[in-house]
Length: 161
Length: 161
DNA sequence: TATTGTTATACTCTATAACTATA
DNA sequence: TATAGTTATAGAGTATAACAATA
Image (cartoon, each protein chain N blue to C red):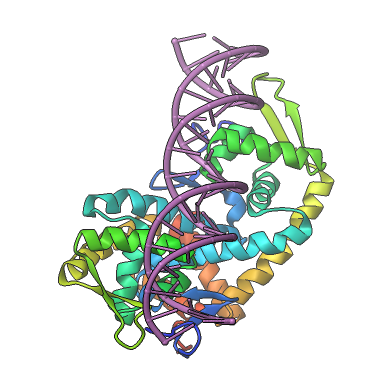
């Protein structure tokens, strides 16, 4: 394994990030590594769109599930509520979401995507998709569709076809 | 999206962790989320084997690629060298790896897996595999093999069949 | 002069625990 | 009494920059 970085033609690189061969056949390691590589790359590139990965996630959730409370967002993202507060603050300042009080339960904030937020989401989707195409560059379009399907089914987002 | 956590039968949960529906059709978000869920779960469960996820990665790399320098490990894991030093310290204390000076270049440490390390890796592999089966519970064995193949090919670990 | 390993420091992110307001 | 949002604080993890040994 010596001089792996410089000399070894065996080194597996995606967009400048190494994928250890030891991860082959170890799905957990492989998916964890791909996840962090994707997160790092997307964070770099989304900066051009004025977003980070977490903000992108929030916009995507609001666009798909409709307006929701910050507690909901915290659960869906697996983070503490305080983390969401700060992110929604930033998004609201930039006009990408708005907070309104839930009339039925005035403790709750309803976070809603604005037209500007939807536009930012579209731009971020393009950046993210391009990044995935780079990281999974070995797949053609059909294989890529197959992969998306398998993941969605595997995780229970979509019922088995 | 209100009351998503308690009431909504639409909530997608894997092993207690939510997967946002907004991630469907957004491969980057989906893979990033699965990666962190997998990392969190594996870290919890590997504790029984006396390891954490990072240590598991190091053992897997050494087992597959053979002994290597700490710089190599840093590159393959995408972390700063200092992070690796601390981890190898811990692994060496527990007898799972040994450090020897590279005779050809005495600056280098050769980190080598011990038999005890190989045994710990086997145990960790079982924990990790079980965790993946849980997170990707919607897949049968054939679909799971297909997914592994697509990821390995996509990322360039394996040439397209 | 450059590189490996190592250590110390500063920074970022996060959970946790208060607190306010609503219920 | 319990919950949503908010804030402040402390802890973990990290990169960065320095240093010693070797090249």
